[in-house]
Image 1: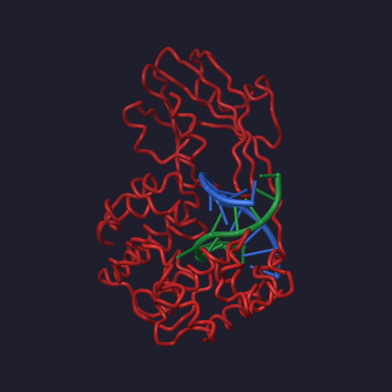
Image 2: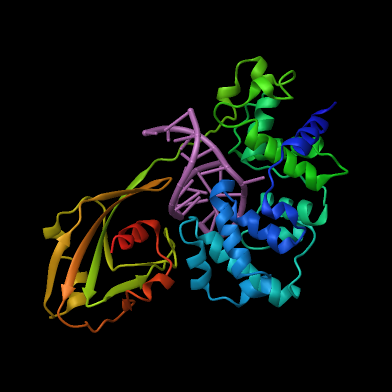
Length: 347
DNA sequence: AATGCGGGGAG
DNA sequence: CTCCCAGCATT
């Protein structure tokens, strides 16, 4: 038995019952694949269910407001996925009559659809023979064949894609692609893989050479950047002030309190000299009723040092620029970063 | 070719 | 703590 036969046999017995596997609907497959980009299956699952329930077809998604889409995506991270998802839904409706293209090349043209996702949709929905190479496949192939080429290099991507292509079961691209990812995910795990019971353990190079823990090889390690956010939580009766984050930064198009970013940790005394205070309050009276402890919010390559200034005012300020009042009853419709959600959950 | 983009689970 | 997860867009 060859590599692909072993993978296929293992999969037929050990596969999980995942909701998107019960469909050949390109829309649902696309939806699930975008949700699962850099996201574990268990984490993405409830979001998939929510999106299918709220947007049963691509027409429903295309007709929605971006705020609604982002709100449903809230908490999942990498929000450009949600923005691109919405954008692409509108393209599919306007330019493709609601029908997804059925070739790898055409799928690749869609925003938010890269080589992996295009291959996944093409094979799962349309039985196109094109290999999926995700994190699971990189790991499995690098270990089984003992390939030390860095998976995050240009040549690495080419090498592994070529290899994955040669190994494919040409007759069952949809099932085979699911199978190799499932195998990588459940058997050839990043830490503590199940080598003892692995059906490939007789011919695995990494196992033979004691290199399982060294592969796959990655070239880059990204440095963590520290940022200091001072949020101003301005309350008047049951309302508070919010704004939309624009600009190319984290949490684009999500909402937050007015805030000041500084390059270093800053004392309240210095923060309060920032122009934002006169911008917001002008000559109105305000009172700082609480200053939170610094809270660390860790992202993959940033650590946000957050402090919340809780301020009360005696009348509803006239707001300009991007600021606006929201009531406690209505603020839930705005998508907010996890950091904001955690703060608001205590209110 | 290199960098930025979230949040959470596992070890 | 560190690593990594059904990656992609941008430069």
